[in-house]
Amino acid sequence: MYYINDKEYKCSVSVTLDIFNDRWKLGIIWHLLDGDMRFKDLHETVCEITQKTLTVKLKELEEKNIIHREVYAEVPPKVVYSLTQAGKNLKPVLEAMHKWGINYSKEYGKVTSENLCENNFCE
Image (cartoon, rainbow, N blue to C red; front, side, top):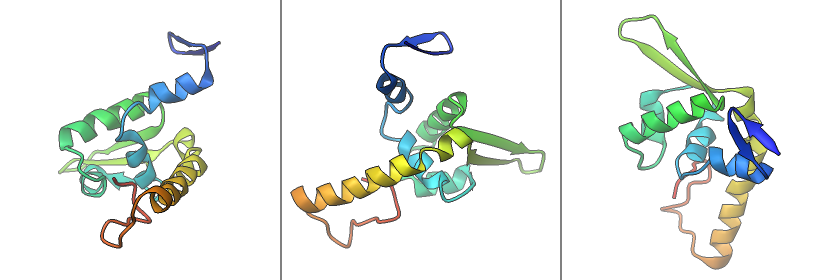
């Protein structure tokens, strides 16, 4: 058995799926692999995410210790998001998913230069 806080899991894959249970979280982490980012930069970089959804997903990732939120006492307020070590450990997983997605698209679909985003985690 696996226990995270008060939740019990019978399978380690269930732990992973419980954390990354939507389309946005892995994209946020993908972009933070390049370095620390402010909210505005993340919002502009993550494809088609609303500000409200980004706020919710960042909070969820922070609660799971995947990202760190640093608030600087400045006017105007400055908030910077970065990956924790647990988040950084996802790099090889995300790189493998990225390569798999490219290869799958080439084999079973169509890839054009207008929608090819080699360095982005987009649809």
